[in-house]
Image (cartoon, rainbow, N blue to C red):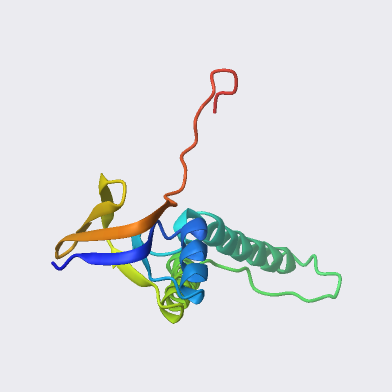
Amino acid sequence: MKEISCKLLVIGAGPGGYVCAIRAGQLGIDTVIVEAGKPGGTCLNVGCIPSKALIHAAEEFEKLSHMAGGKSPLGITVATPSLDLAATIAWKDGIVSRLNNGVAGLLKKAGVKTVHGWATFRDGKTVAVETEIGVQVIRAETVVIATGSAPVELPSLPF
């Protein structure tokens, strides 16, 4: 693969990385972002957004269950609800997909080039990205590392 050179390389397309890359692109800075998964990070893909969607579905189910029990102050009674879990999961996945596509669209609109893969530093300004079709080398004047974090258990505060 041909080597890519850019002014700014952002590693990680979570909320820190994609916001950085989009703003840089809007300012006319030649920007490349590298992400192994889908844009949006943990919150959008497997954390906050999917869990809130499923919590909302559970709340709606609970409301209907309450009404089915004849407890509606309005006198409304409905049949006992049932849950099609596969349909609920598909609905949640659709929300996540639309938001992923939104982030990808914002990156594209800002002129940011996206490389899908896992970046490994060769030196302070060069990375090799393992992609599906081979290794892509990227050289940048400036690199932003926005790869997220991992929890650390403190001895005095165990999980």
